[in-house]
Length: 271
Image (tube, rainbow, N blue to C red; front, side):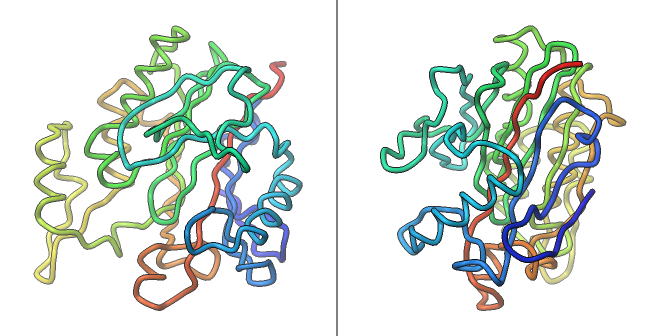
């Protein structure tokens, strides 16, 4: 795990496991010196010119071409889209033509940069070094109980022949089990998903149950066939770390400015 708390432009997080892989991966964060504190998510409340500037600066800092960024229209669902060279740049302004109702992207095409927008939800990275295939998923609680990580692995297998046993995975910064108190409907939905060992992701407290999105996605990946030792967990809570990350719950509680972050991933040249 690498965290950069420098001024704009900056990269807030990279997976350590990607350092020696032919994969470019980076996540933006909160940057007080930047316009709108580094918000990179277009929304009804965002200042679009600030988002434009922040995305451009993040692309420079992370080392990718902004025009190659490709996105889905995230709905907290479980739909996965295979991305080809013809899809390069989908989801960018002014068209905002991202893949409809799509929360995970997989590709074997180096010309595209996969991206997901987050602000407490889990960004899940998947890489198959044998087939040189990449996946990136946005896993909020609905996507997590819907087993989106498993769905992305299945898409990689069907489209490119990836075997989960060969896949390396990363669970990025998100709201942690320390802070994620949820209602009984969330716990019930997770238990209904039937993932082996699922109660490891439930922390019962007298004040209200907490849901561990990190453990839930880790258990989902393991059940789908990814070796446990091949999963890197950032263990960074966006609410606890709201000085460096945007957090939806922190903004809702008036603890920090609202905004969104981008996690990106791109295939590089194989050695």
